[in-house]
Length: 90
Image 1 (cartoon, rainbow, N blue to C red):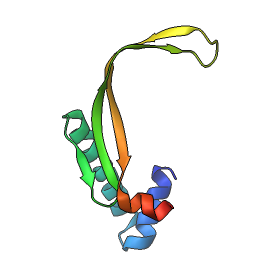
Image 2: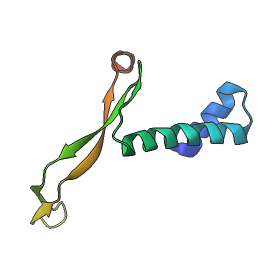
Image 3: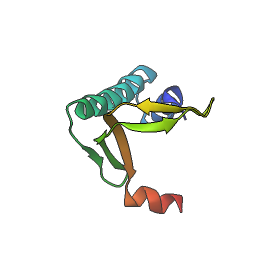
Image 4: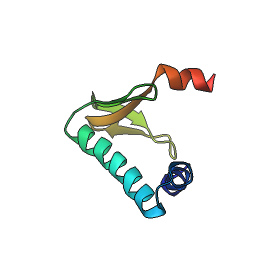
């Protein structure tokens, strides 16, 4: 499901107008994005948790050529599924 499909689902199930559904989805995603940029954790009980982790520099392997490449250190976003989400999928 992409963003447009998510907006369509919110529109169908919420009773909001299409424009308000788009605003709602966009604002939720922007709020999560901004919180992560500030190093905050976002926890949606039952769904999961978004946070940022630091990853050290390391050596990787190019999937195209098989050559070793140097991967820089940096922050990466991480999502951990909540218990309710895990249970719903199994």
